[in-house]
Length: 128
Image 1 (spheres, rainbow, N blue to C red):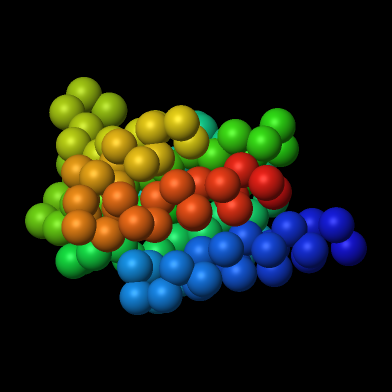
Image 2: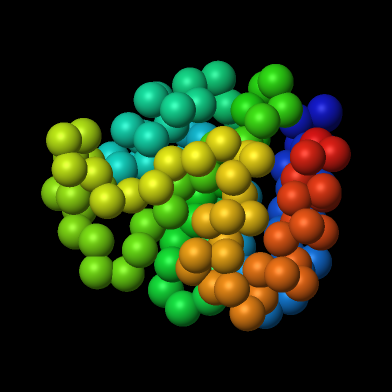
């Protein structure tokens, strides 16, 4: 019951930001079958129950992991990154960050929206 409430609140917080976030989905982690997602979950958030994935401005994909201790991990996929690059530890172009760096990632991918929305989104996610 508590996990379902967290899922609804997380999804609501993300959707509340309007067109800043498109294609938002919040799913239990076991529903993600993409090998890249599974790799990311196992490495950065093995105990997480839910993950949100959404498209920020342009085609930049962000994955948000809600960690049990209250931190979030961010995984950013830039347009043009290949699957091999995403999985390659030696030369990985994908940025990983903890929640405190979330607005920095947003500023890099969509500065025109980040100033208006990142603080609101951050505060709502942090409350979960």
